[in-house]
Length: 139
Image (cartoon, rainbow, N blue to C red; front, side, top):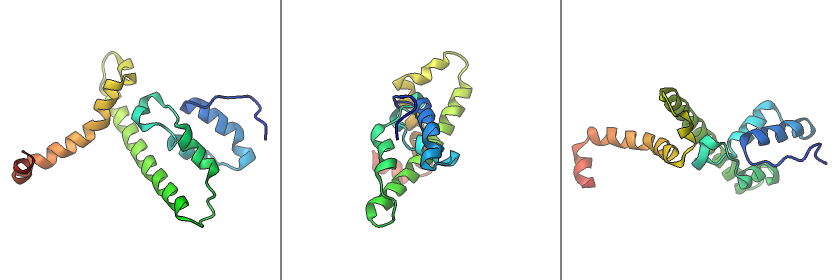
């Protein structure tokens, strides 16, 4: 299998281009392409849509014959990544809508770190607000 055009896969757009080029030849559906693409993203820098080559490569080196625990662990890991990525993406979209100016700030690591951990902070604050015993134990 020789590529029609050499593409360097390092972001979601270039990965989508490459997977669409190969999907018929290797039997992928549109859903397969979407799942492979979004479970191969670097969630630490989701707004930059960077691909983690090691995560992408796992999709093409795993056997999937159902014969060992590694396959099951891989699929469970990918399910977890899918849920985390879609949740974070929804949070980013909502936060982006609220920005009135300087929308390019979503590309900064400071904005992303705040965005990434705001859900955890909100959940923790809600739990502590309703439970004085937890507040005392944490102090």
